[in-house]
Length: 495
Image (cartoon, rainbow, N blue to C red; front, side):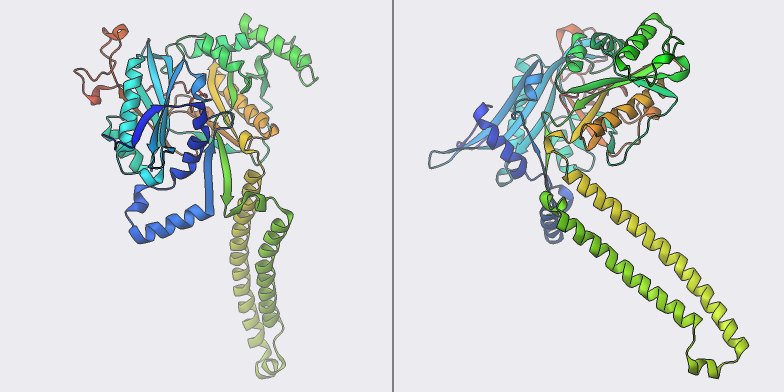
């Protein structure tokens, strides 16, 4: 139960600023590992918060992402203060969609943006808020809720497990910071279909009966024609291109090439192909970079970059001067030393000294080069990220598909083309959210980190009363809830 001064209600448009502020006030840096170290943990936490300040933003409104779903709920907790003012101190949201699950259609809810003001945490507000959200979802016919947490977020995992959530899938998102340019393999030709209906058909056929894919095939077309979709990229192996299409390669006739290759795929002339679509992940949920050691404006300023260069060159100059003096003292002995030593002894000693100097030179040079490379890459990375528009920072690849014996090679080329496109449009980050152990993992870049998908079944829909593979709270234990398939579809509007 909540205190009498706290009430739960539905979100209203005027709550946008308050919910945005909760992204900062919820203090996402806090976790149980630091809480276990009262003194050192607080010091580290304070240092971390001062050096790194990053939080989410919602450029099109806090409820913009929710409005993309079939249905949604956003619940806020409001504090009725003594002076009569009202203050939003917690929020949680869920997107409700009809999807395929083990061959049948169910309504699922994607839970996200659970935030509680740090001054109100540890009072049971998050639990009551989540339970109210579950009640609302039940009333809307939702069978299952699911969400994601970071593997190292012990606090969040314990909280959701206490609410009855269980393991659904290990996720291994592939991430690439688009700092360096990439080159497309010459073995694969990538085109962008000028017929989104046809591309939607290819994707729909690939995701038929795959977990979490839209139950209505038209949803794929809506995704591909959305203003937030940056395009679909389809790769075809060069050796499979029909002779009639070869003259169109490299002639700047992309539309003609796209039409020809689409017809060849439809007719069966091209049997191996693979593709992916690209989404503006910052359109509904941006990442606001406030500080990385110093402010964002400082990182991209010319004086700060000059100061960084000077700070880097100074130890290099000191090291070079020290090395020169050691070599000089070894190769050119002083006059007194020359008079005291025999010529043969001095020559032998100088050779040994030079060998030691050579070994030191190799070791020190290697260490300096490694450190220099790390510092230069770090500086370049921070300047690159700081110079990006926060509302156009992240791109998300989604709906990967492939056909034929060389389909995975074609998919690899299409993924590369999507990153090249994302970089050309000013994005700083490319993400592909897939399950750990995805059947097409060999075509994907290495995962950047790992997260956990959790699920909670609320009820059993009448449509699957005869399907024993589906979990339920009625007569079934949580251990019986089936996990997501490795190839489960990830809707870019939810993540």
